Image (cartoon, rainbow, N blue to C red; front, side, top):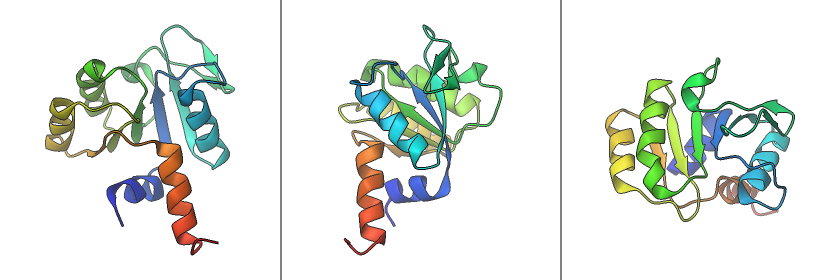
Length: 137
């Protein structure tokens, strides 16, 4: 099992940092897909109060419940600050979406014991893993 599958199989509570209310944005499509697959989605966006019927929080540290995976939809240069918050809230994994690569942030997360995925789409990886489990059917 690769790291992506391990995260998708093990953890169910996903904080989506940078979740947009725009149905055309990748963050909205990924979060709505994950929610439909039974994941608990916690939106993180300081400009919103609610997305996908869920309360939206301004930052990770303001979420009043445990967070397992932090799915990042922000620019790569913002990743280190988000990783700091992920570590502070006790997240188990950090997932940087397609196009997001920050080696320093990844290293820091790994050193703190978090699983790290960079430059991958959580939705696409879930679809691949589901297809693999069903034998490609």
